[in-house]
Structure formats: C-alpha cells, structure tokens
Image 1 (spheres, rainbow, N blue to C red):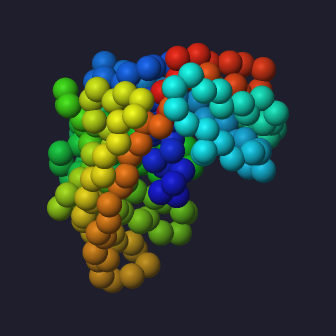
Image 2: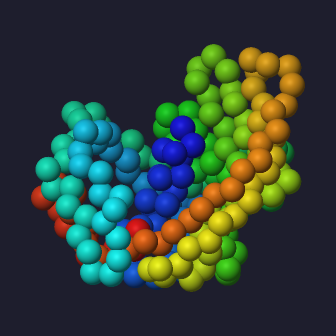
Image 3: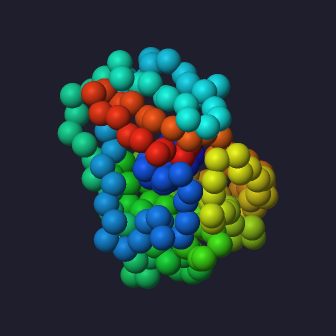
Length: 188
C-alpha cells in the first residue's frame, strides 16, 4: 500500500508542471480520479532527463469505473487526533486515508490509515514526518528525508517503531502518453 500511496500522491503533482510549487498542491475540495491500469506494461523507470517521452500508449484500463478521491480538511475526520499537524486528508476509496499539510517550502505527510475491513492500521510519522515534496521542485532535484514514527493495528496489542529514509527524485521532464491522450510539460 505504501508504494501505491506515495505514487498516488506524487502522481497528482506530476502532470502538467515543469516546476512544482505550493500553488500546485492539493487542498480542500480537490478531487482526483484514479483508474486501474494494466500492470504488465513496460517499465519506463530508466527513461529520465529533459524532453523525454514516457510512452504508455499501449496501456489498457481495466473495465472498472474510475475512483474519485477527495481532499478534505483533516479536522473533524475519524483519525484527526492521531495527526494533529495535518491540515488535509486525502480519502482514497480503497480504505487508505493520507494526512498531510502544505507550506511555502514543502508538502509534509504526517501518516496514513488503512482499513482492510477487519483491522485498521495507523501509521504515524509523529517523530519525523515525511517531506514528500520540496518547493519549488524542478527536474534534476533530489533529496533524502528521514522518517520516524509508530505503526499500530487492532490485530496486535503493541506499537511497532517505524524508521526509514525516503528518497525523492524529480528525474525527468517531457511528455506522458496514456492510451490515446498525451500530456506535455510533465515533471516526474
């Protein structure tokens, strides 16, 4: 779920921007449509640099309706007391809720919850939150950020320490082709 979660957050910023600033961030009332795509497509991770093309034109969407996720104020949500520094919550339709805030210099992820229907997993980056994006973010920018906090779930009676490092790279600019649609001025 973590890879999907981060990919979704970063993907929301990746289209139509050669530089990402705080003005490009998600805020209350923003919505994002997500589609389930063919997972056997060619991996274009090595396609980097300026003026490149990420050609996923052969990728097919599965015959599922798009899932629309909404950004809401974190205050008043079910888990707001676990994420007191978060201003916003992205409510993914598959049980994930991400808590984040924006400033003039960065987007910070304070953690997330995941409800699988039987248990709720709560991941709090309450010791050292994730600097998900620095502003402005331009092609070639890269940084590593330490993350630290606690994970808990209804399934076990104790918290699990979480310590790690996230590496964020803006590794290319160019055109993204998805099916028959092309997006220009993309920063990935």
